[in-house]
Image (cartoon, rainbow, N blue to C red):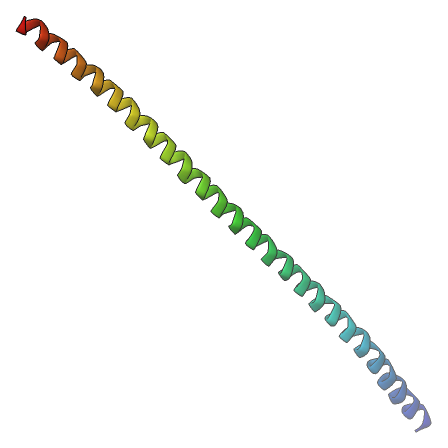
Length: 93
């Protein structure tokens, strides 16, 4: 009986000690996982901010290209109109 009591007592002590270690491991794991999630969230926010900034820059570039093309077309049309006016002036004389 004494031997059985000692065996049970030692097993109870062992389980309790290991349960504390296990709880500590789980706690550390959860803390690490929370830190990792926080870091990932910050990365996502940073990347979203960068995406918004790049989209704004892209919009500005597209606007500049559109203005450039419009100006080029206006210049070409003006040259054509000037040519027509000169031709009409020649015929009028």
